[in-house]
Length: 471
Image (cartoon, rainbow, N blue to C red; front, top):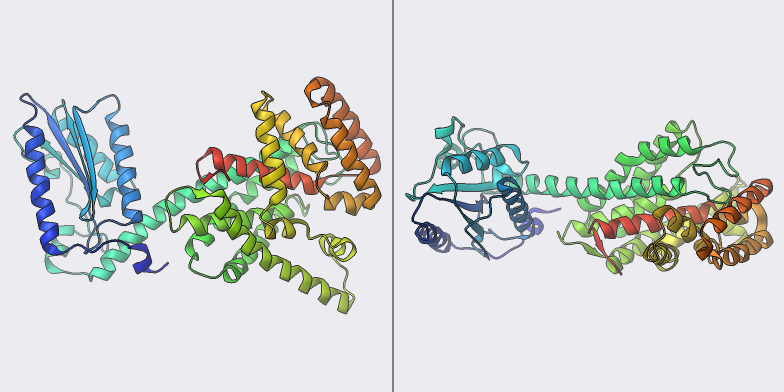
């Protein structure tokens, strides 16, 4: 991301900056005059160098500071609060019925301990209108963003170029918000993996009851795999954020490389058992798309916009599949399961879902999950019923691979019949257990629908955390 793209806001002249300081000082006096007794006033703004004081990342930092000030004041309700967001920079005032020394201690701790504290300019004034200094509390002066020495000395001597100071400011802001969002997205991703494998009973699939039709893996294999993938989900998101300015084809290349490394890490954790290869691809696309969108806006990304970016990234994967399949056919190399299904049935599997914007998850799995939850079913049961909904509507590539087209078609009808009795509750679980036994005998496993359930769960968790808005 380029500096001029990060600091995108209105320019402020030096006279405007000086006028804003005078207005802030005058307003401080007016607010302190509202109270006759002992009180304190918090005056909060940001330390942003240069002629642009109000831009998206700065406003996000201001909001973060407001939340932290309120949190640290706890039950101390302000006598008065006001804020403004002018082009000269955002600012806020808290008038408190509290000793200024106690307030200053809390605010200096915030400045010292918070990752963005160096950018927080929090003055605490007593009823006499005087601002308390850090030296009164044995604290060192504020440090320079660039070299770590005393900030005032560097400012007086102009030790660093404005571009360097701004770059360090933006880097601090970018690292904080990217890291926090990446952690939240990675949490949603791994949570989706854990909830998918934990949903029980699932016909032919690994769950808490048994390993289904999979003799080489069990419930704990999936736990190991999920834990190993956490940092990679974070990396997918960070790649989308860091390279948001690149084309989808360039970004997809980066995601594909990271995905191959994630797959290697998964196989190392599972003793070479493929537990999540398809989901590594799907979540790389989804996390990368979210990072790309969040890089330019602090607000939740609209689901429709996320899906559009996923489609653009997924199309790159379709070209990759057809090229690889044609190359392998030409040199007589054995085809992968996905390439074989593409050759036999024209099905693109996980690649096709991503290129189409995850329609099965977005329009079948996620609505089904929400519907069952709204009817009072537990998340476990809602996930199981959503799996059946997907199985009854989607051509599952794993079912085709294991059982052929005729058996896969019959399984879809069977899933729809079972859903008709879903309101029976416990009775349905018995039928699901019987179906599980039948699938195990026939070596069937709806692994494709299980992956779509995981994507549906991730979309649900992303909405619940406020990282995307519903479509």
